[in-house]
Image 1 (cartoon, one colour):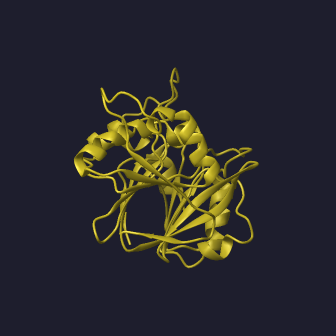
Image 2 (spheres, helix red, strand yellow; image 1 turned 135 degrees about the horizontal axis):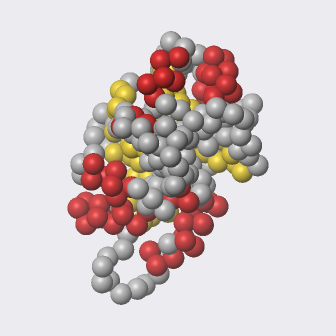
Length: 256
């Protein structure tokens, strides 16, 4: 499997609007972070997205994305769903609807926010053709020959999903607490993507020290910090991380 980080930033993105800090004005492309999005390409060639952030159209163009076979949703906050309309080009290319996997409450929110996709309307301009596919935590399903297991994590007081791909890789964004029942699913991984929004503590996200503490406990072979705010200057902060831990950046590709 190949994992491509299409977006590694927070809900504001980096650079932030109106900010002149040294990260937001950096010329290093690794300091530019679009809103959160992961592309998972299975060995069979199936392309699975995790979330559709507002920059999804630009991500798809930059990475020459030719198909999207399914989308997994972690939760329904704006930075994770408001690029959904741009899936419609893939309906035309693939001549098929795209399944959206998420908890029922998340799918209900999507169906409300994008009501025009699910009712009869005029066809001018086109609209996404989507199939809503409810899932539940810890009930695995298969896409492209890979077992995908939704994992319960907490985003402040909001229950959301992380995802485990096969037995050796997991993606956990927007997390402030990992429930006891989820910890065993995150041990013995080859690859872990983990939220580390800021350097200072945050009410609804892991921060830098907490993420490193969790990684030290789980001991994956490789870990990448994601959902990054403008606290991190890649050239300095990445060099200071423990062995096997790195900052993610847009365009990062990792295979397992």
